[in-house]
Length: 504
Image (cartoon, rainbow, N blue to C red; front, top):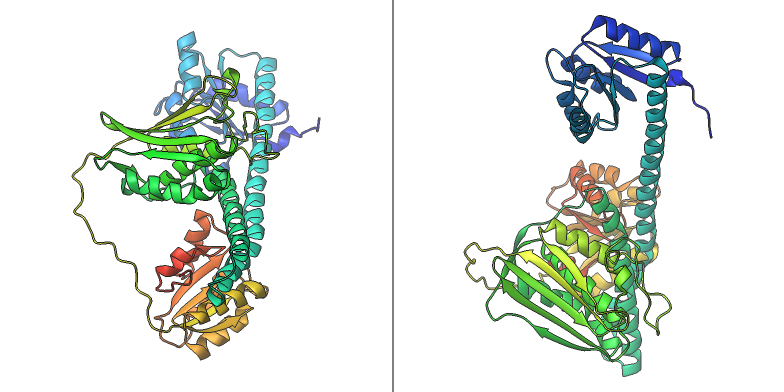
């Protein structure tokens, strides 16, 4: 085990009694620790934010703010919540007092008078715990960086694959059945890879509380239909019989339509994967008071009784379908659980046993406010020819997207560096610039700043088209002057919002 120098550890000693504070500081200083002091709760909070000690020795009885409240504020503040707190008291010595302190966030609780050896031993134990926690946070940070980089590196080749496929279908829409089947296979597996990348990032975002939902009033039928469209390929591929039974009355849920669809789609994909070919699947929904119950049943491999409680765990899989060697990453059901919880609902599963199928149930609160007046859905019409600039150092990605857009009658230019992007924007005056973030000579944020300073009308749309697709990437893009942020591979539905119907 590595050795540590106590002088590297800054400790804040908080006590309103000069004598008690002096005694504890002397013990700690003699043990080699670097000690600073505060005599009241207000000063303790200020010094904690300013000096960032690794541990606070905090007396409960303080003249201005109770030490328990000081601890609660420290743990509630993101600036100080990682500081270890060793609560001490000569007055509050009962078991209930200790429990209240520990429940309030204290990392340990000692009753005074404290023997010097006991104090040093407890401080050292907490510092060891703190080192482990910091190491785990660093591992977690590196994991998030790795996942973001992995997603970026995977998305980059997926972009030109998807675009090239759309280009082939534009150039030659009518082909022999065998050729179209091959195209369909490429499309399905490309979409599957995109979903795997998004699932990996979603797990990371949810675990850190970084996922944001786009709340709106969503009809049950709309998000179930979207889930069915997403999952149709695997249901057909495995020859399953699928029945759908939705209530006749229109039911509404307050939530994120994309995430609600993802909940149902993940359950359906899970059922399809773990049911032998030619199986039966069913989706039904019923209103139960102020909730809607969505039930998805299958006659697949079932779940052993001992695995029921663990089935929603991350990377957890219960058995394998006999015809499948690898059944995914084991994150789909974990995402379902977390997304349902974020929507204020519950999810559970029942199974009579191995080989006897499974039934998943999702309960979501209904939105019982007055139904909005029906609106006539209208797709954004394809506009007349636009001047477009595609900027990407991946030449295949830039060229295939440009060629696809040109087939729709648009005038398109490409650029492969930030300098070229600036030069061609000024000369070409595009209506829309699709700009990659990771360019070889300068990053896309800097390019965006230069484009926004050009002496030309600033009426062009600036769209970040990048493999970095997390929420903080989107915020960074908007702050740098982009009008929107599209993750690679480009979603043709999002292009349609710009009047570019390249998938048609």
